[in-house]
Length: 241
Image (tube, rainbow, N blue to C red; front, side, top):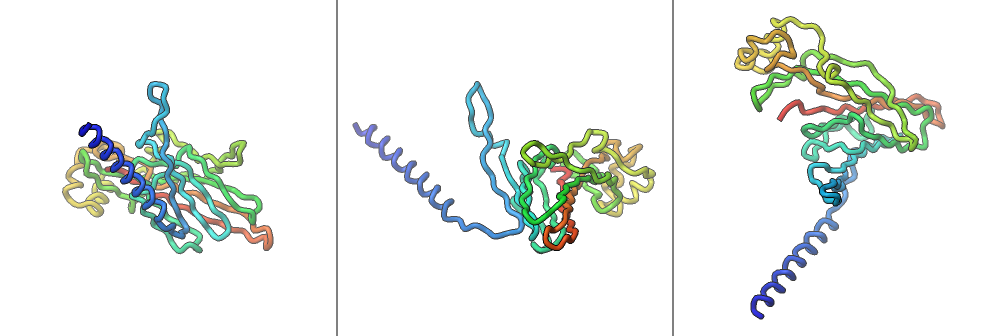
């Protein structure tokens, strides 16, 4: 009987703690921002049973301009931090979490005030120098900049972000090894320059090339004034851990 009593007390204590935790989340005030992020736990299939999978967060990032708002599905921002200009600016900057990408993701657009709405995407690559964990990214040096390409629409009116091949990820302007080493020494330091003394190209390990930023461009025409509008979203990608 004593054992049964203590088990009952333990169950009641756990239930009370869960209720308190749930209430505290409900009381959290909402933040009015030009960019917001909401997360719903995704579910995975294991042994024919649907269970929560913490490795697959179903996150929607909402970006609000005065004329238009967009929802980007399944994009996790870096530590829930957002770098933006003023909400009324024409350009917004986001920092994606490690390993995150917009490739293949769906974008929903909400706007009743624009005509001839068009979404386009391009990307930029940069050099990164790796050292089995630590790395130095030359994001302020030279880049390969792809062309703008329009995003296709699905039957539900959502835009689908473009995906790129491994070869496209590794595109980079022709540079000499001397140029590369000089840039690494300037931006990273002498130790990193010595670290690539034997490389033959920017893609020769421990040097590598990969996507460092995605760009989304939204264009359209205001219904009332016929004024052309253009908005830009810059999504910075973390190139290493």
